[in-house]
Length: 117
Image 1 (cartoon, one colour):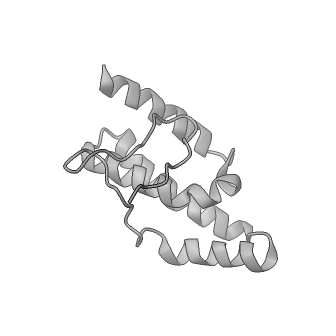
Image 2 (cartoon, rainbow, N blue to C red):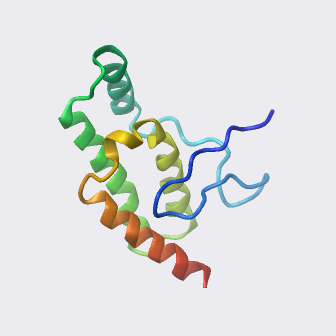
């Protein structure tokens, strides 16, 4: 079975899953922010829009996953971040440009480039 490619995340290197035994997971942990993601999906489906406080809560959850990476977290922190970004893909339009996410993404891109050097 072939997996669908995830769209690229602005400001981060491609987060494609690797072969078995590689650095990145094939499937993200579905438990991350599950109830929040479900509420947002329901709001979008039923009302065509999301409650701002729910979007802010998802943003806070995502930033909480970014922080360990920015503090020099290792492979596990990056893996968790990539999983969270995959799970946030359906809500990209809601999160796009929301402060302070762009600054975090720039910092993550800088850190990713530095770690590859």
